[in-house]
Image (cartoon, rainbow, N blue to C red; front, side, top):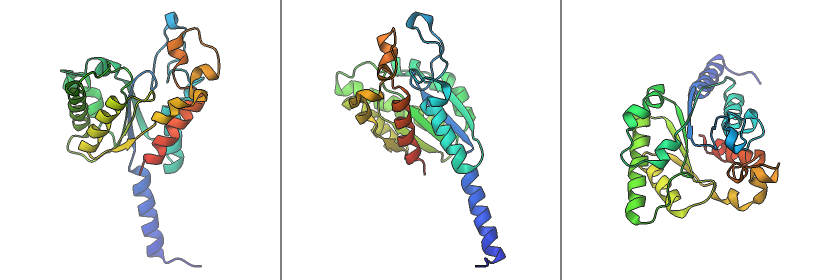
Amino acid sequence: MTRHPLLLTLIFVCATVHASAQTKVLFLGNSITKHGPKADIDWTGNWGMAATAEANDYVHLVTKALTEKAGVAPEVMVKNIADFERAYSGYDIAAKMKDSIEFKADLIFLAIGENVPGLKTAEDKAKLQASLTTLLRALKGERKPTIIVRSCFWADAAKDEALQQACTAVGGVYVNIGSLSKDESNFGRSERPYKHAGVANHPGDKGMAAIAAALVKAVP
């Protein structure tokens, strides 16, 4: 079958637009996203904690999938914002997130919640939701990036609801991965022994792959 030159041109243009639509990708998370070496907990990596290698953490698996899909590697920024989780109320987003905001990502992944102190009251949940919404709106700016927010790996109803509501407020896509922690084989401790229980409790290679698969599936 011979295709008309105009049709071929349209196909090329559409493919080019699709491939370049997400050229800058921002990953905001905690130790599951990236954690530097820390001798006192016997962690020597500088990637998502409990993955056996950098290539096996969810950030790099998602990046690889996006690269294969678009045919070109995106520009990526990875930032650990555990300090936001621990002190989200009154957090100076403009100053502490300046680099992430100015990055102007086309695709934003927010993967936090695990380090947020337990939400004991409705007021606590409302404060978290408000801070998350403010954070996402600052990252979004006047643009229309794709925003994907995932639930906690260690499922927590109150935190997850705050994350979902903040995601909805900015028109993002919410991904619930809470079921992953119900499968013991998704934990790092199931793949190899760790001296520190906290490290062992992070997702291992299988868990990371499952997180990555859920996030990639959510990308338009």
